[in-house]
Length: 71
Image 1 (cartoon, rainbow, N blue to C red):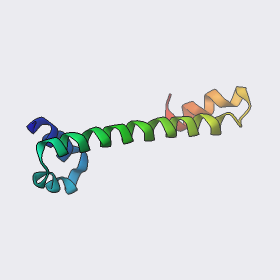
Image 2: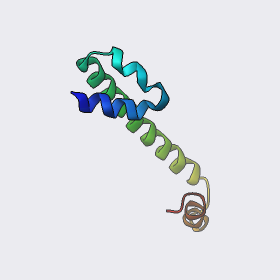
Image 3: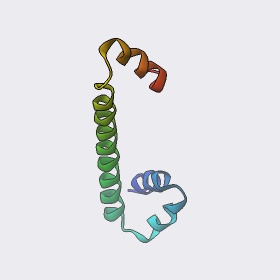
Image 4: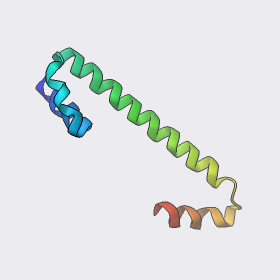
């Protein structure tokens, strides 16, 4: 259970001190929610980037992605 608190403290950064007031179950649940939210945010950002690049002509799309994101 201490691993969840350590991971949560690391994820929250400077705000991680609040983890000490949580029960182990609460910290585990909060860590799970945080990880799911981060994954959803990454998926949403990836989708938004793909949609934005679709506006460009195909021959410009690949170089634009490489220039902007190094992919």
